[in-house]
Image (tube, rainbow, N blue to C red; front, side):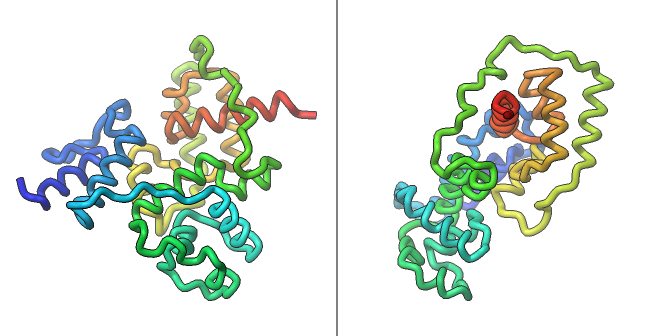
Length: 249
């Protein structure tokens, strides 16, 4: 097997498909685990760009990322993973001089590949609830999530839903519009092969449906199927809703 064939096989696996038949792997397959997908993407990128070198570990201080987010916010621009990559690697010339002339602009140009930097920043933003979302909800960037101690999903499993009610919930979720549907990053397109609402911002209507669902079940797999999102996303949002409900004044 040559290098190109190896890359094609890894790309198929990273997409959750059989490299031979093209069949999509089952939801519970290890191919759908985030770390497995990331590892495959890193391997593919390394084989394509620097097959003889180990990609450097990304080391960007949290204060620098927060500074960049604050800079974008001050200019009324969204600090998306893609924009932050362009900022730190100077792969885009921003018309706004406050951004393009900032001391951090282009600091990591040539040091990291665009793909690995995108993965790193996407994960960082997810872990920190994407800064802007935190500010809107009153949580400071980098702060410990106060809902982490909620053990609702670790309690004894329960499910009061009938099959008819489950089907109705799935239908209601499927009718919710998607805010992100065009010009999606590659990692989002891949995630949506299995979770059609992956990386979609939570809106009030969906929160309302999830809150109602939490009164009926704590089974993450079932909720994941109904809300078309990964179990981690469901758990995080569910714990946050439960926490906020407990601390309503």
